[in-house]
Picture 1 (cartoon, helix red, strand yellow):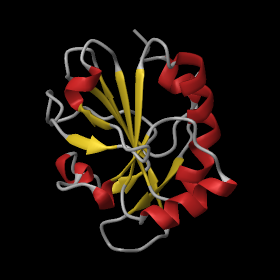
Picture 2 (cartoon, one colour):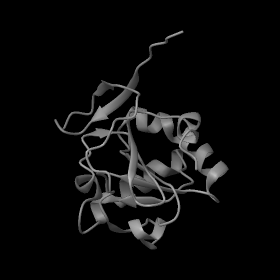
Picture 3 (cartoon, one colour):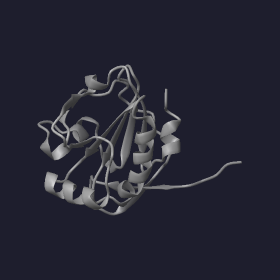
Length: 163
């Protein structure tokens, strides 16, 4: 039995904040090796891609203004809480200031680590060529991108990539 469904996503390329329908299927990526980065978490801790060596990393790009991003937060919180001891999870807010994100987090708590792309010396979203949010990369323990999911995802979908 075949079923069809769609996932909403927000495009940042046009500067518009209107939804853009995307395929829910993971895409094959052109870059098998994940681009390296060093970033500072909102907590002040510094991380790099190498910080996650030996673990599967779920790298999620999002924005506070993106409806589908807001909608997937409870799913991502659940996934993170259930799997934080066996995998790594990192969230990159692509655009807003610390003050805007802190205000957003008062009404929508996020349990997983957050990087503010606006505070980084080199944009992580540029390194990963993000044009649609939410976008989640699954990076294996060797640092290779094994999937790219554009649009909202679920705890169940992410669980299919658990080692």
